[in-house]
Length: 102
Length: 102
DNA sequence: GACTTAATTAAGTGATCAGCTAAATACAAA
DNA sequence: TTTGTATTTAGCTGATCACTTAATTAAGTC
Image 1 (cartoon, rainbow over the protein chains, first blue to last red):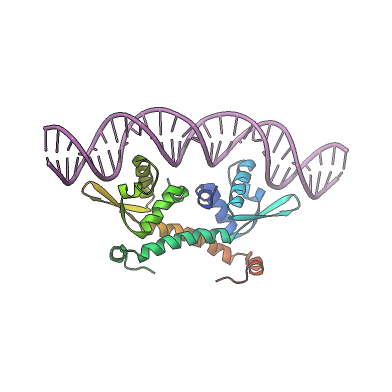
Image 2: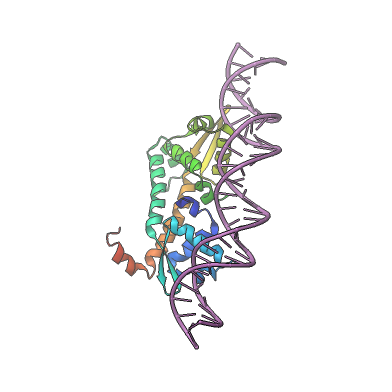
C-alpha cells in the first residue's frame, strides 16, 4: 500500500495529524478513537509501511512518531505536478482566475 | 469521495500529472491508458467532484484541466501537519537525526 | 433523417479494505 | 510463575472500489 493510499483513510489522517503534534504510544492513540485496539494497530502498521510514521519500542509500549520524510515525498509530488502546471500554457487563465497567488 | 481518496488511485494520479502539463480531452486521456473509456470517465468524475480538475464542454468534447485550488488544499494539509511537527517537542530529536533541514 | 464520434450513465463482478472478536506475543509486577 | 497490561496477529464479514460490457446522450457529418 503506497503513501497516497495510506492517507486516503480519515482515521489514518487523524493519526498523522496527532503525531504531527507529539509522539504517542499506540494505546494513547487508540484512546482518541471509538474503535478497537486492533483496528488502530492495523492503521499504524499501514502508516509505518508507508514510511509516514516510525516506531520505537519502549518496554511494553510502542511509541509512534511522525516520519517527516514520508510527508516530504508527498509534498514533492504536489509541487512537481503544480510545477508542470505553472510552466504550462494554462498559466494565463490561472492568473485571470486567481491573481493573488504566491 | 474526498480529495485524499481521489488521489489514492494511481490511474487518477497519472491523470492529474498529465493535466499538470496541459489540458486534455477525455478521449485523449483515455488513449494514454490501456483501459476502457468508461473507466477513465469515472476517474475523471471522481477527480472533478474532488475539486482537482475542471471540465469545459467544447462541442462533443470535454476538455479537462487541472484545478490548482484542489492541489493547494491538499498541499496545505501536508504543510500544516509538518508545521505542527516542526513546532513540537520532537524538534530536538529531529535536529539530531536530520541536521541539514531547510 | 441516418450514421459516426465523443463521452457518459447503468448494471454487474472480483478484489481490496476497514472494522470486528478471539487468540497470541511480550513485557512488567506481584 | 501467575496475573495483568500493551500491542499485535489471525480470521472473518460487510462495504467500497476499480474495472468490465451494454445502453444512452449529445454533437458533428453526410
